[in-house]
View: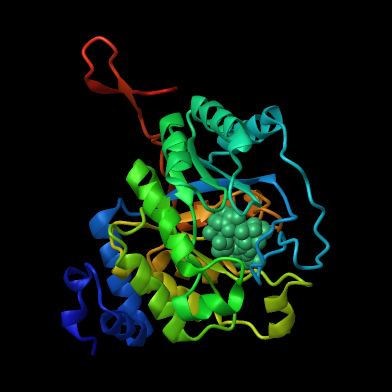
Length: 346
Ligand code: SAM
Ligand code: DTB
Ligand code: SF4
């Protein structure tokens, strides 16, 4: 029988041993706890839906061992320079029309250069003007860049810790864990919501997955959004080439999502990359495990996603409805009184 001391009330700032104990629960006990904790914190049967767009593809100076976009690996990827703002807006309109509530724009940069900032700020303003929530993932940020993104109204910044501090050294050599934490601190200080999670299935141990969730749950404030990606193996990347046909069982993804839900009860937990090819039953279990967010749209950044047609049917079959977009309001200074107010930009 499950140890009742492992209930959701003990979940705030969980220790590593607490997280390990959740992983060790019988699966049905874990799923029940996770679904109950989800329902204590969010409306039942409601999911947050995001669509991704790559705004600058490939030739990235970083050497992340899982990524098709690193300039250090030889993959089939066709690099593309920054796409036109008009083209991105067209894609955002399509995402909105198909029911997505958040538009996430990703650029394969180590960090944005200051000359790139007017471009990304314009994208934020124009996408927000459509009534969509905005998310960006542009690599490392300085405090000043984070501030500029916040002032433009950016809702979320995605910057994943990806795995444990120890295993991180085996997957990327061009930056370290503290670089990631520094950027997350700049994003938090600027008042932008944090989207930070990781990838599983890279050959890491369960101990590494425990450490990742421990890091995320023990940040000064847990991320508002936690994407849990399952590795999409891409030929020509060192990790996919090393793993060969070895895959992490889907049950471990389900377990990891459930433990993320218990460790961070009030965060959105996202089924991120890796859904393509899962059965409906497997996906239903990921939602049962407490996931309440997923990427919608036929493409992720450079790889295929589950199709929108199939996802529409899946959501109908599971009785899931899409959460309404609630873009962050931009703080404005009232020039006359000097008081801080807020202004909705759509
Ligand atoms: N360049 C930015 C950065 O590194 O933060 C953002 C883009 S990067 C593609 C965003 C996240 O996607 C990575 O941190 C990783 O978690 C995930 N990701 C990238 N390639 C993946 C793959 N092949 N399979 C699963 N997840 C992947
Ligand atoms: C995240 O954690 N997953 C998304 C988003 N944040 C940017 C990216 C997934 C990328 C999957 C591989 C690809 O399409 O290149
Ligand atoms: Fe570049 Fe991001 Fe890919 Fe790493 S994950 S190679 S930083 S695009």
